[in-house]
Amino acid sequence: MTKTQAKFGLEFGNKLGGTDLSIAIVASRFNGFIVDQLVDGAADALNRHGVAEDSIVLVWVPGAFELPLLADQLASSGRFDAVIALGAVIRGGTPHFDYVAGECARGLTRVSLDNGLPVIFGVLTTDTVEQALERAGAGEGNKGYDVAMTAIEMIETVKAVENYLQDPGSPSR
Ligand code: INI
Image 1 (cartoon, rainbow, N blue to C red):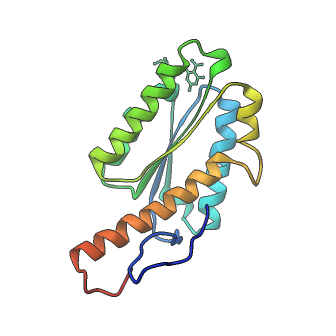
Image 2: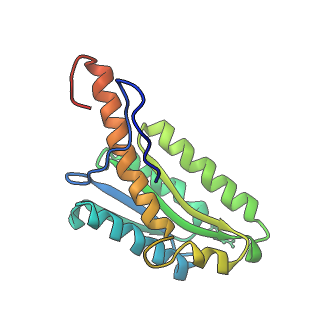
């Protein structure tokens, strides 16, 4: 995540702080040997940023196509600050790659906008298993880690803008 210098008197974003957050993760079992590593990466990021383990719920679904439905169930419950969707769609072994990957992305976007909640896209879409594994490594280069950071940032930014819009005079951003 790139940090940018503030350019204006009023700016939002770039804030990270995970305490008191409740996060739902929905993950697909298809290509589970890769998705497991994304889940580990996400757990690592959330843990390092102070999200309590008992404030994280993990739900498994069969494949990436099923992610939007469960993401919607979790998002609409009102219990979570964000939903992180994790999966791996690999073109090599997937004649219907475009349908699975496309509908998954479209569905998750809809869930986010319909519920007004950050729904974070942590679904790898690659040509090969090797490319997917490269993005699911330990430490640097783990998409699960990266999208968990995106979730924390988006929660903070949405809240800050919400507070500002409700009370533009308030100094807390
Ligand atoms: N699901 C994935 O998550 N990744 C894939 O690569 C994949 N392939 O290769 O087909 C895949 N298919 C299953 C799909 O997500 C649904 O579970 C299935 O179509 C039932 O709705």
